[in-house]
Image (cartoon, rainbow, N blue to C red):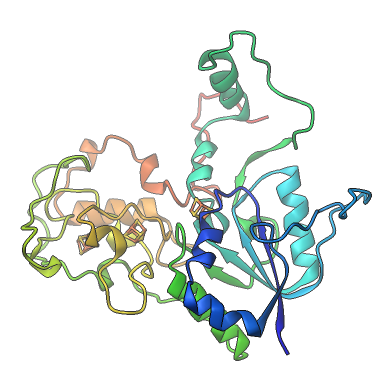
Length: 313
Ligand code: SF4
Ligand code: SF4
Ligand code: SF4
């Protein structure tokens, strides 16, 4: 019998749902085994009933619930709680759900500052007002899913590699619990390492690294050793897929930005990266901005409003 699956997107960009569609032929193999009972990216299924006549969000019961995106407003919170109530197993899909993701960068400013900046200083409409009607009120900050509901399985990645999504769903169909690798991006990176401690200065990602395009990736020197802020040492592996390819960004000859979040669910990418940089000889006082080292994992109170800034409302 097919397993019922429900999917929801909260504070998300829909890239995680596209990753599900990117399963390609694997999705065709999976479809006879799963029954999507609710998936807004594919099916028209209204939250408040098809006629909009219900008072509370109603999502059908399912064995597996896939939730992408973090929690930023009251509607996200209500949908997340309904998914928890209706799904036996909740999977946090993507780094927005597991660690806040890019939207959690907002946690370094207050809501007040956000509104002032967007509506009072950067709007082209000088009379712009903060909208209040038909919009779910914001919470004080952007939360990862497990700050509000229990999560059973974490699938980080921005978005997660389709192979990883397929592996997780297949494991569940076989009655197994999917396991994530306790490895870093560096552990799956084939670049050449010459030894730590010799980096002289930090290079910006817009500067082209040294490599020969006619030579394979394992002939390129490690980007961190070349002076780039490559987050590979402190970022969970997974983006290389299951066929032994190089990590996605490294194969494009650009540094890892840390999109899979910390190697361990509760790790701190900022602290771990400062250690990695120091042990590579990089002077930490040269760092232009430390917050950006948490650009994918700013939930769980990792990124907070700095002292002296306005309080959150
Ligand atoms: S994890 Fe990335 S792809 Fe997924 S919803 Fe967030 S921003 Fe989009
Ligand atoms: S720091 Fe970056 S380039 Fe170097 S081994 Fe790790 S992932 Fe590869
Ligand atoms: S290399 Fe880093 S930033 Fe790029 S996809 Fe992999 S984990 Fe994400």
